[in-house]
Image (cartoon, rainbow, N blue to C red; front, side, top):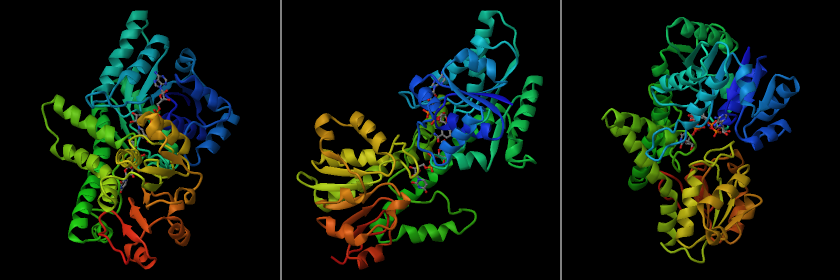
Amino acid sequence: MKITIIGTGYVGLVTGACLAELGNDVFCLDVDQRKIDLLNNGGIPIHEPGLEEVVARNRAAGRLRFSTDVAASVEHGEVQFIAVGTPPDEDGSADLQYVLAAARNIGRYMTGFKVVVDKSTVPVGTGDRVRIALQEQLQARGVDAGFTVVSNPEFLKEGAAVEDFMRPDRIVIGHDSTPEGLQAAALMKRLYAPFNRNHERTFWMDVRSAEFTKYAANAMLATRISFMNELANLADNVGVDIEAVRRGIGSDPRIGHSFLYAGAGYGGSCFPKDVQALERTARQYEQDLHILRAVETVNDKQKLVLGRKLLSRFGAYLGGKHFAIWGLAFKPNTDDMREAPARVLIRQLLDAGATVAVYDPVAMDEARRVLALDLSAAELARVRFASSPMDTLDGAEALVIVTEWKAFRSPDFGQIKAALKHAVVFDGRNLFEPDVMAELGFEYHGIGRSVLTRN
Ligand SMILES: NC(=O)c1ccc[n+]([C@@H]2O[C@H](COP(=O)([O-])OP(=O)(O)OC[C@H]3O[C@@H](n4cnc5c(N)ncnc54)[C@H](O)[C@@H]3O)[C@@H](O)[C@H]2O)c1
Ligand SMILES: O=c1ccn([C@@H]2O[C@H](COP(=O)(O)OP(=O)(O)O[C@H]3O[C@H](CO)[C@@H](O)[C@H](O)[C@H]3O)[C@@H](O)[C@H]2O)c(=O)[nH]1
């Protein structure tokens, strides 16, 4: 099938590469010339396990192309996926300017029937707005070409994007029941057949319900995390181990084990913005989503918890004190630092007068970029970008872990102890067991695990 993907970011690039892997002829469009040049030179703009190989293989086979040529991209695909960003607007609602620009571009150049698939995360009603934006262009050109708008939200996770796309636990498709809508549904069925031959994982619905399903999923997952984070903070006060509680409740199949990990707060490009956007949608209908408002507030506070623990241990003024930070990306296996809790922690420590040495297995370049935006030159001068986890430790008052990279799970504790000024570990992801850390002679501060120390 001839497919065009508009927007070659996390979702667009993964969708394009994976659909090409199944034999489709894929044209990826982006407005970012540098990104397209990089891809055409064999580079990959993001860190995503397994992606480089899939892209290289399919480029070499001639099934995957990258370009900034809008006219050629519209001409190419009978299916046009819109996978551009939908960042938060100033009021928290989803900014649809890129989605609507993509729709207008299709209307500006199309000559025959197109299935326009919205893969970006967009508020209920966006399908109608895409249809109108596209229709206006066709009318202005006096062209009578058929099209239909389908909603096919994406549920992949960063760091596991290729795996999630190739083995989806669900495929949600929203379409209307016009002849064009039914024709599009048949096409989508064919496109996704390799993922689930009997379509047992495909959920068919109307466009608005599909749009809403995406927000409902992210809102539910974010709610679980904030719920556990709030309980973890109480656990700290009452001397309870939240990890034991997590295992205890997760074994109930009605609750399940996933997304119950207390930590440094959720980050990334999706949960923070999607929770906000859903709240904003509700407000447009004069409805208050009380639970989601609390989810957001709890998360904003949770990002401060690690820093607060440090301040309460070492004092409100940290001038002359140095700290080691492991993990900068918002989660492991990605270099994405959008809404990363590490950014909040670094700001807190610098505001209190400290210096920091930071390390992340893949996000160092991205950290240099975003911290240069977050911090003044004088503040940035108090951040040292280390070359390895151990390189952060010399003379530090404590080690602070913010992201649960696998490489941090079994470190050489003897070396850590020898390099640190004090044997103190703040573990924002509960990687270690408090009693083991105590036996090793560390003062250990987890999230919701009470303080255990033999020092
Ligand atoms: N990142 C994720 O894990 C994830 C997962 C599921 C859904 N989503 C949703 O998918 C959408 C895309 O997210 P992302 O993380 O891939 O974004 P991204 O910022 O990584 O990529 C978006 C790309 O679109 C390009 N673009 C913008 N306007 C364009 C236009 N008119 N024509 C062509 N290209 C254009 C940008 O240059 C950029 O490369 C968002 O709505 C997001 O909420 C993201
Ligand atoms: O038990 C948990 C699970 C996750 N997190 C944090 O939650 C954030 C989001 O993690 P994750 O969901 O794994 O990553 P994303 O790539 O943001 O993926 C989410 O957002 C995507 C974009 O909408 C959706 O497609 C995915 O289904 C959804 O999981 C990260 O900061 C994690 O550290 C926790 O704190 N505790």
